[in-house]
Image 1 (cartoon, rainbow, N blue to C red):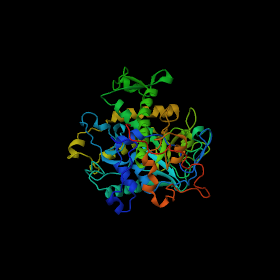
Image 2 (spheres, one colour):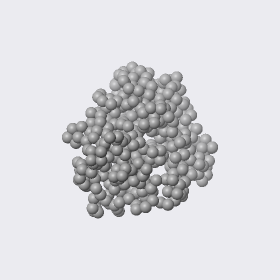
Image 3 (tube, rainbow, N blue to C red):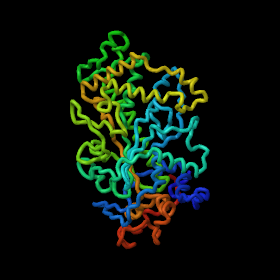
Image 4 (cartoon, helix red, strand yellow):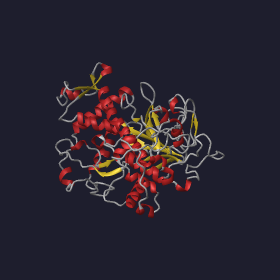
Length: 475
């Protein structure tokens, strides 16, 4: 294994550069995976930023936005389409739980893929609509066997097909309390940065999970802990023997399960981006500084422009961005019965013969996968209706559209780390970034472009050897 002191490759890949790609692309693609894991750190100081306090620092450089290629690489690393999932489950042992046949760069319970990326930069606010993108029939891997040039073309085309501009301006997010934690005020969503906000459709995972728990094999009874543990609209199914009253689970417990399954998707996406940041020599970090209600647009800033619906208890809840990313719940559906029907249509449309699947003989496998019975469908509808009528919302305790983690990418200011930290705070990959990715912007001193009127000796100069590559050694 190489160490964090190992310099980036000495020269560019001729095939890549022949097509006009920067040398840094070759560096990133050749960067060892385990090196990215062990070199990953939160690096919060970007070009043009000002940190007050004990670590007082004013970056003397102009903020530089990510290029289209830099951003595309982070997007596909975060949540790219990687081909078809193998679906290596026997049809008689739960294959009917799968929602999609596509695979992403992160694992998803039952291949739900209920989490999608919103992101914002200096050119606007965007949504990456990955759900409807499909690989070619039989394409297990989207990049395997392709040349560097073909891989880059495919990545740019994929992002181009999925990218939807929602607003031509950078998203207006909270800049202070109470919508943003105080330790993020100085650097969150600043010029030159790209802010990634994964948002999870909790209703997709929830309804799919209900079809498992209410199936003839499981026969769980869901009860309401706040109402004397009464069955959630399911008494007739208990009386008929279709559900087992001794197999109880509360609303809180099942919604905690949904939460744990969905929030890890956001974590997977952010971690993928963080590892890509290191391989590309970029700065950034993952944080939880935004209060979701503000970030989604439910308070005094537009945020991501989500619609909020009233509930019987507590504040209104985010249900979706109209026409972009909508939960299976009113007001997008007349009632929860209609919402369940819409879920079923969306899920089982993925099983149609014209949808690509990984098997050599797809029909032989999928023809054996049983669809839910009419009584199972009705049980799911009865439960969902109970929750929505009782609480005026679905889910009862979780936001239908859930936002927790945020990941930010930016060009790191290595001089800050040279001024305040010992060697190794930033890696050779960071030091070489502008020379390898943006040679046209590098100044005579080998530094990023400086802010107008800022002399080379201004705060943020070399300031010591803290950012210099460390001597070789173990990780």
